[in-house]
Image (cartoon, rainbow, N blue to C red; front, side):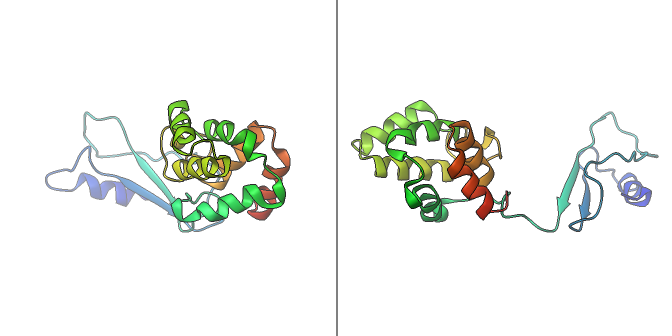
Length: 169
């Protein structure tokens, strides 16, 4: 961020404090892993001492991309191919690790009348829709990272490793 950009905010009439933002963008591979460079803010007079900086890159990786309901078939295939994941016994535990709450899982079980494949599909659908506490889980939502983290936490290392390899996690 150049001092000129910061000074531009101070020259607005009337000044647009504290609602202004400064955006820092980078091409893939540029910059440091963390922002450690101080930026002196000269000429800005405001009672607000908070500065929000938005960091952006020009690409979004497959691993960070949130999955949605259109990815249900793909996620199901990753879990059920070669009978790797014992969904009959573990779909509820998976749902909990993915951030779904017990009442949601109980409702799924009741609505699906205990048909485990249907229960798994509804569980994953709720996850892909971001219901309950899905966004608070590791990975920040319904993405491959959070699915792998849930599988690891359950001890389903082989399934997790296969997804890691396929999606370069």
